Every structure is written in C-alpha cells, then in structure tokens.
Image (cartoon, rainbow, N blue to C red; front, side, top):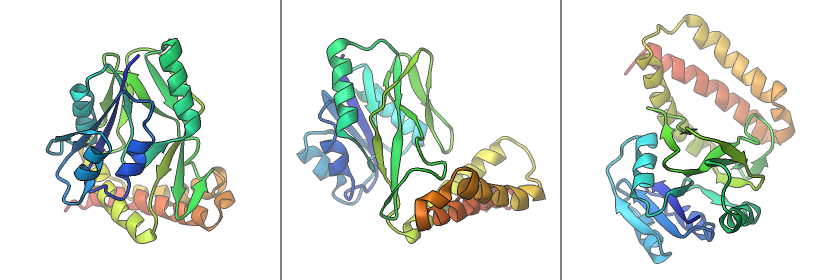
Amino acid sequence: MRISATIVALNEQRNIARAIESLRCADEIVVVDSGSTDDTCEIARRLGARVIAEPWRGYAGQKNFAARSASHDWILSIDADESLTEELEAEILELKRDGPIQDAYAFPRMAQYLGRWILHSGWYPDRKIRLYHRDKAEWVGEFVHESVQTRGTTGQLSGKLLHFTCSSLSEHMRTLDRYTTLAARQVRARGKRVAISKLIVDPAWTLFRSYFIQRGFQDGPQGIAIAWMAALYTFLKYAKARFPE
C-alpha cells in the first residue's frame, strides 16, 4: 500500500507547511495550485512536494484532478488548512504495514475556531472519507460541500484530522460570502423557487439546532458565534438564490 497525499491550494502560505509536515505517512505529496500569488508553491517545493499548476475546476473537479495526477492508487486527500494528528498518522502507517481491508477510510475531523477546539455545535466528530483507492471512489459536488463517494466498502479510523478554520470573524464573513454564493447557485440549479419561509423559518431553526440541540452552548462564546453564523449562512444561501446577482 503506497499512498499519494494530495492538497489543492490557492494562496495558502499560512497553512501549507503545517499540512505537508503532518504527512510523513505518505509516499508522495502532490500540491495542485490554482494560481497562488504568495509563497505557497515555493514552500511546498522546499518541503518536498510535487507542485502542479492547474486552473480552478471547482472543489470536486480540482481534487479529482489531483487524484488522477498522483503516482499511487491510494489517495490521502487533505485541505491546506488541515493536518493529521500523530494518532491518525500511526493508524495509517499500521494500514500500510498490514494492508487495507476496505476501499476507503473515514476519520473524525476536529475544528479550531477563534482559538478554541470545537467539540459540539454540529462540528464534531464530522467524519470525512479522506483515504481511498482512486479506482473505487471519487469526489462529487458540483458547487460546494464536496465529498468522497465510494463504490466499495468504507472503514473507520479513530485518529483525528485537525481543521484550522477562521481565526477572526472577518475571515469567517469572507468565507461565508464566497460559500453562500456557490450554495445559491446549487439551489438555483435544482430549478425550485425559494419560498419566503426559507428566508424566515430555516435560519431560525438552524440557530436553534446549532446552539441547543447540537449543544453549541458547551463551546462557550465560540458556540454562540457558530450558531449565528450558521443562521446567517442559511439566510444568505436562500436570499442569494431568490435574488440572484
């Protein structure tokens, strides 16, 4: 079992070194860059990654391109703002030693938000399939919230993937604006009219679910911010779909 780790990147000089340095279990690291103007590519090359320049194909398209460009069939796909814990790395090394018995593997992702590790709010355990045989799985999702879809069996690992999200509310707002634009396009592509209730009821329900049902109150002030931002995301997604730019 030889593994190619893949990362898609654009202006990730703040994160790329941490991501690459956590991939010691990989036999190859491929960074697919879509036009960085900072030092992302230079840092990646210095740390031993193979860097490929490729125009943006969308989230799923870019990650599938990265998988096709890899030298090995087993793909370990992470984002530039993610990194493996030592526990997850050890489990993957054990898989390499003993041989895989599944076609893909999922593991929990834990996010750091505004300086705090989030353990509730619907953000954890947030299991993701990130290790897979490329003949048995691929990325899907035309606009946003891409995920790996398998045509085989999926196993579970317990080691965590760390996700270093927004360090400020301003950064979160910029990300939210970009993602809600893509999510609105996805809503419009389905061809359904956005009802007024989607602008009123759904955001309120999202806030209530995040803070109370998903126990965001246990995440301190960050839990309050997550709940309100989730509600705003829901509102903007449907508002942009109803009133396209």
